[in-house]
Every structure is written in C-alpha cells, then in structure tokens.
Image (cartoon, rainbow, N blue to C red):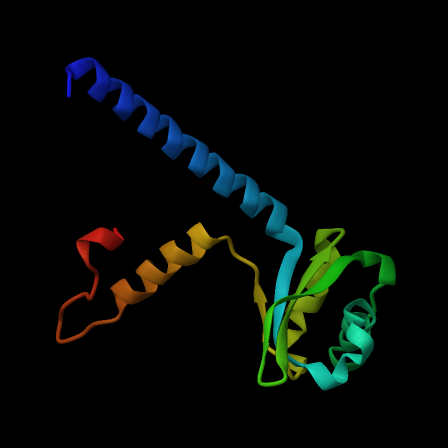
Length: 144
C-alpha cells in the first residue's frame, strides 16, 4: 500500500474510535434512568401487562410509593427462559428510580443498573483482572 492510503486509513480508524466513544457516552446518558428486573416469573405477569405488574411490584413488594406517571416504559427484554423473563424499566426522572433502587433488597427479584455493552465489557475485564489465578491475571492481549 502506498503511504497516503495508510495515513487515510489511520485517520478514518481514529474518527471511527471517536464516534464509537461518543455513541457509548450518549447511550450511557440515555440509560441513566433505567434498570432491569431479572428472573420475573411469567405466571405473575398476566396477559403480558408488564407496566401494571411493575407498578404493583414497586408499591406492594418494595414499599415504594411512586406515581404511575413516574414510569416512562416497562417491557420485557430477551427470551423467556424457564418461565422467567427480564424486564427493562425507564423512569421519567431520577428520584423515583433512586427510591426503587434503594429499596430493591426488599423484593424477591434482583434489580440491576442497565449498562451499555461497552461498559459491561470494560467492567468484565476489570473484574477478571482482580481475580487471581495462581498469582496470574487471566486476560488475553486481544481483550485489552
């Protein structure tokens, strides 16, 4: 390849990295009011009425008094596995999300923050880097 083409490819790759980073930042900003409920039983969610079930779960099981208007969206994500589903919830503002997340241990289902794939990958690398296997860190060069 000639030198001009290599420089142009390097420039385009740099721009692509910058766009990818900006996209991840935008996705993190959009998900700041979101979290997921894991292992919700399908039998408890009548007629796929996820929004109503979510509101009842928050008020009755977690003991959080929030207005129905505080929840922007609630829907299933992924496939049903073993009669259980994941539910993604988006709140209209930070405060009701904070109240629910603070009381999440009162409930029977795990509630976790919703991360972007890039953040999950970097957290996975960080977590595995802290695990020691005979004094060696189990990370391959292609994972950095």
